[in-house]
Length: 326
Image (cartoon, rainbow, N blue to C red):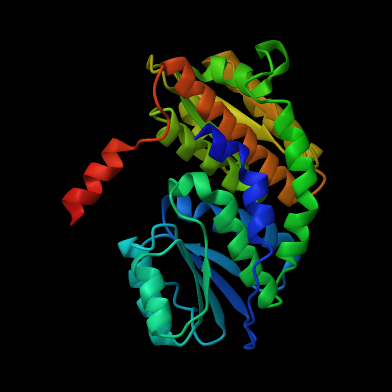
């Protein structure tokens, strides 16, 4: 798992070299996937919300948004190729005549794509889906660039050097005093983290939650601000239960106005319940901020697994659930 986390920039770099030709124009984009296979779509949808002139959405489940049709780019992402929800969406998108592109390491999704002669971007197999985020995101970016809806390949490529430099400061060899990821893991250990990010980079908070869930085998939740000021803050300030919940605010360095307001929220929570953790992210662009934030969260989840003395890779309960679902 550690090797996979470290390899994310290389995964992106390798995948954006892929070639894809799409001739049909589209006026909407729908990423389709579940769990670790879908998070790359979340990141790219956040990124595109500021740069693209068409709507982007992420479908997690078995129902496509009603707008998906002949002028929609539907990107089907299933690392294994056997995610039943994504296969359902694949068939529905094909039925509606959408421009369907599949991203997978094989399985049934690859077989159906070949059989229907639909575009397929293959990614290397043999990993946990959450550990292949660079491959899946890079392939999805290739589809966006091929459809001329966002310069995602160019913008991802521009981030790679910064991601590698950022990683160097949080590797296992870096001591706790200089290692932000280890410091955060020490604080989150023996708590239930609730991770918040601003709406424009909310995918980072979701990624932190799911990585802590799966790698550290811990309960964790996520949300977004300023929305949490209209609901969650009441629970933080007025709930008198003794559950060891810990709010974690991920701060966008480019959004000073919102950061000041969330500072007021943090102070209120500190006065009433517990001292929140604020984590300042870094990045020159929204995409770079999202990716460095994901790298930081991935390392935090890994260091939490070390503190707990467990192997981060297996997810026995998910494997058991899939067996029962069959």
